[in-house]
Image (tube, rainbow, N blue to C red; front, top):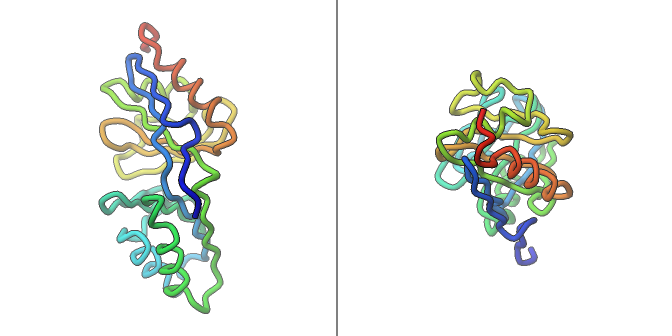
Length: 182
């Protein structure tokens, strides 16, 4: 792996909520049919996390596993751990039909924090934040781009495609401007 470079070099904006780009993080898209033998062991070996249920995210220290669809999981881990995790997945799922891909450099990750962090997201996504549980991951749209988010550390973590990182940072920064609280 090359040396990690975050999409926006750790950009930060402070308004009524704090918006920061927190990359680079390691991310693996893991696809396998539900019930695939070894799937749970693969996720455990790669992240230490339990297999999440539908629309849930599990955490183990600095590692997470989010349910993205019936046959897709997003593994989030330290960037330096990706190669080892891919090896663990391959070993646990040897002989089983699956796909495990390092998507770390194709994603940007943001954190929105503060007592009113939810207001930033409410301005940008149609998702009903009142119904998002503490252990839930949600795929949605933020303005015109696809993203996934989950509650974390007194706010929210948001993942989007790296190609739209500047646009998403602009959206989040604008939505968090002091004086624009809902």
